[in-house]
Image (cartoon, rainbow, N blue to C red; front, side, top):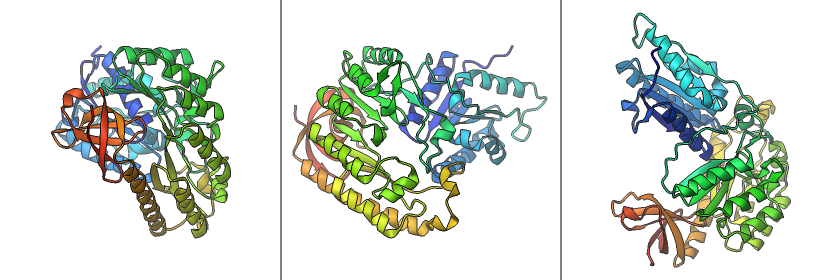
Length: 452
C-alpha cells in the first residue's frame, strides 16, 4: 500500500484557546505518524484550517481564507485541503458543496482518525487516471460526535516553549440559547484527574512553568470524585509549575471553595475570567444563563474580598434578541460598577441550530443598531481599562517573558494578573521571570523596563 507518510502539514487555527490546543493536538497526532510541521501553507502537502463557529463573521473569514488556499491547490492539485473544528461540524456536508475544492471536513471528535482519513484521500486520488484541479479525488466528511472521546492518550505538540494549554474538559451541558458549542462539541466530557496531573508533571519536566487548564465551562469539571477546585489545588502543587491559570469558567460554578484555593495556592495567578454576557436579568433569563445580576455581583465581591489584587475579565454580548435600550444601558451601568480589567465584547450573531433562532423575528435588532451598541460598549470599557491601567503605572510586577516584541529590541511578557508588558531586553530571556517596572500604558498594554 502506498502510505501517506513523511509529508508536510500546515495547521492554521482560528478561534478560542481550545481551538489553539486542538491545533497542537492535530499536529501531535500527525507528527507521530511521520508528518513534518510546515511553517507555511505554500510548502505543505496537507493544509488544515482549524475553525471556530461562535460568530458568523468568523465563518465568513474562514471561507474566504479557504478560497485563497485553493490557489495553492490549482498549482499543486495533490495538495489536500481540510477544514476541521467547530465550523466544520456545524456546516458538515454543506461545506463540501460551498467549497468543492475542500477534501476533508472533520469535526472536533474526529481527530484521532485524522492520519487514516488523510491516507484514504491520498489513495483515492492516486487511483484516479488523471489528477487536476478540475478532476479531483474523494471528499470525506467525518462528523460523528462521540460521547466518550476526550482525546485521552493522544500526544499534543506544544508550540510554546514557555507555557502549555491543558484541556481537562470538552463539550458543554449548559446550552445557553445564543451558543452553538454544545451542538458542535457535544455534551460535557471530563478527563481523569490522574491523567491530567501526569500530563502537567510531564510539562514541568520539559521545562515549561505555566499551564492553563481549558474547558468550555472549566470549573464544572468533576471526574472520579474529584471536583475542579480539588484538581486545581493539585495542579498548583506540582513541582516546577510556577503559574496556573484556567479558562473559561461559568459564574454558577464559581464557589467559595474555588476562590479560597485561588487565594491560598501561591502558583495560582490572581486572575479570573468571569463571563457576564449581559447586565440585565431579563436578558440573562432569555440567554438561559441561570444567574442574576445580584448573584453575579456576589461572586465578584467574594472574589475580590478573598483575592485583593485580583484582575477580572469578562465576555459581553450586546443586541441579544429582545434587548431594549434600557436593558443595554443596564449592561453599561454594571460595567461601570464592576470595572473589569479586560472585556471581550461582541454583538449578537445568530447561529442556526441554537434555541435563539426560535425567538420572534421582531426581537432581532438591525445590524446598524447592534453596531451602535457595540461601539458604545467598547468606548465605556476602554475608558475604564485605561483608567485602571494608568493607576498601575509605577508598579513593579513579575513578568514571564513569552516572545519577541514588534520592535527588534523588545520582548513581550505577562504579569501574574495577565497584563501584557513590552520592554527592551534580549530574546535570550524568553521563558524566564523578571521584575519589571511598569513605565507607561497604551490603555490595553504596558511599557516597562527591567527592575532587576
